Image 1 (cartoon, rainbow, N blue to C red):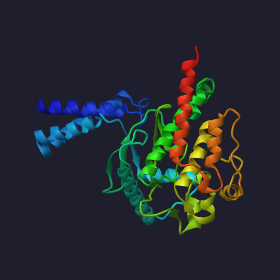
Image 2: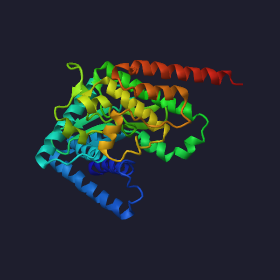
Image 3: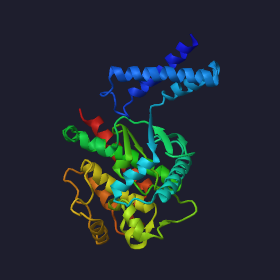
Length: 343
């Protein structure tokens, strides 16, 4: 009876695992595969009983089952780094250096997330394991992937929605609110882009993520790169401000610049910034020369002005995230008042 009770607990976990969206295997699982999984689960139950005894075995399986209540998104740091290299065009380092970099990346991201604490528009860190590779961060799950993929997939439907400007403004407000929280904690993100914003329920539940490049600015005024020429190969150039290219300078105003790019990405449904600039050298040269993205005619005047202000050449003249939140908040309140007045 004890064996079958344990078997039931474990098979419930297996069934839930097989049905999770993150692995996307539901369409490929056959009855034979399920039967193999059940046989393996029986073997595991017997092993747990023999090694641990009944009480401890029940405890282990119940802990595993309870973990399933938290629908989680698990990132391995190796995958995150590989993805960033692909996005940014960075070179692959040696095996030893890669291991050290992954360990440092994982530890830094955990420290940043711990300092930021809980915020409704920042992806919550549930747990982590940095004892051995692959290093893992366990984050809360979201339903609709990145904001970039969401906008691209639902582009036609969104274009037909008369409330589209309001929807995009709402999402922008929540992103700016998360960035304002980061500033209050003296943390710069340094990788703000819609590919790093997750969507649970658009537009009210969007969450900032990917803090591998983030820096704690408590004891410094700005982030500077001593290996500027090498670092250019490993950063998301299309989201970085001109002062970084000229002087290796990046502070909170750099995140404001990136937020202007995010607004442009949202207005263009996830298009690549500076689509006519094909090489990194062209991006650096043109951005430093004052070249900016052309904004669609459908962009509202408020968002158009914000994009312009965030992209000012002098970083001291750019608005703060506190200012940006206030502008977007007032815009949403005016929209609400307008809707109330319409019969």
